[in-house]
Length: 109
Image (cartoon, rainbow, N blue to C red; front, top):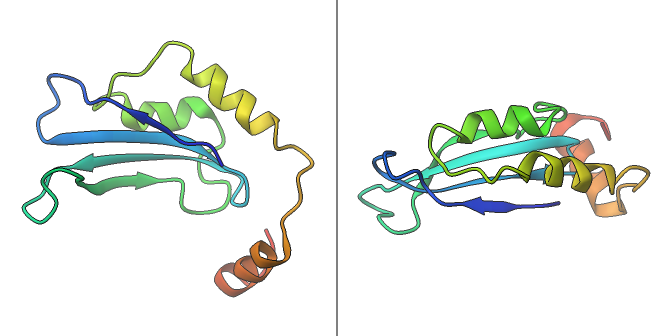
């Protein structure tokens, strides 16, 4: 799994941070945008969160498009995320990941 925390855009009110990455067990990129809330003013709460289902976001660009309106995205991030995904090709799930997938999804995919 990879994870990159991004700084909020100056014009993005209430955003604490955004995060994008690659989740190998779910075979999806993910994107989160954390907004300050009354209960979590500093850490924020992920009010935008995509990439929680197997294969939901198939490209780095899809994940970046979700956070781009809210965060500063480095120019090389898509290439870095794609390389991180490609580095996991052929890596198999461990016993605990297989068990969790069966419990959550009814299969290992």
